[in-house]
Length: 396
Image 1 (tube, rainbow, N blue to C red):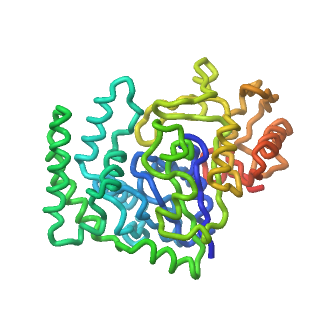
Image 2 (cartoon, rainbow, N blue to C red):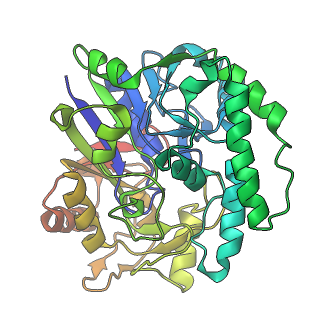
């Protein structure tokens, strides 16, 4: 069986959570392969809304097992709160539906403090970190100082935690950052004990054994233009957000990759600093933000908005070998008379897409817009989202 992959092709916030939730009904296993709780995947169904940070988006499917892969950085405190919230609101037995890779790295409270200290020290040159401790955790991983989920089973885990914490305290003192590094020690240890209720697995063996008999869906966080190698460096995240990250983050061979679903919005958004060629600084940009509810699912920060950048999108398609495109928030362009990227102007459709459920119901102007993108990108757009709800999805 194959591992199909869902990726964001822009600067994140493309709507991956909804699509994974929609597709999860076809997959017995959903796996998160990179990133941390700085990514918020929003899901809307049955009149309810949820924001997932570290929990894979297949959690709401009764017959789907969910894997937190070894490429993820996991904040035990955030993860505990997220799981308890899901269990309280839905009754879902989260500890029975999620397995966690032993090799996933742990985000300590002092990682978050280091994140804040680093951002403060950069002044005007700051990259716009979400201050969730992601960068410092990946830094410790690469420098071989980090703690992993499997370490919580060690008899001397408290000593290992103290050693890494002391290393962080030294760095914080050197930067003159005032804080209480021990403020969340108790909450962290409680959350670590909570993690022990889950099955902790050797992810690479678990995934490859599963693929012998079952198909799997891998879920990425952030977007391709935030990739540590191929994104708009240095205004990027700290992990590999392109398709190759699924192989590294889950321990699978490239031969096991099947479909690569690339998700993009009908326009572009970006959070934080960094280049954004099609950004709109006028009332049109404000209107896009308002209609699209473009505020961070985790941070609440307003997102920068602009027209679709097909050049950047084609680049992301190339890097990840995308086989199927998925277009999100098509309905957010319903009210615009003209759509004006730098080189090509399209006639707006000036009609409501949210009630469309088949391709035949879509206005011709919108179909022309789709056809142009498919021709330019040389990849078919197989799924079109016309609203946030699970049902507002057109399969082509």
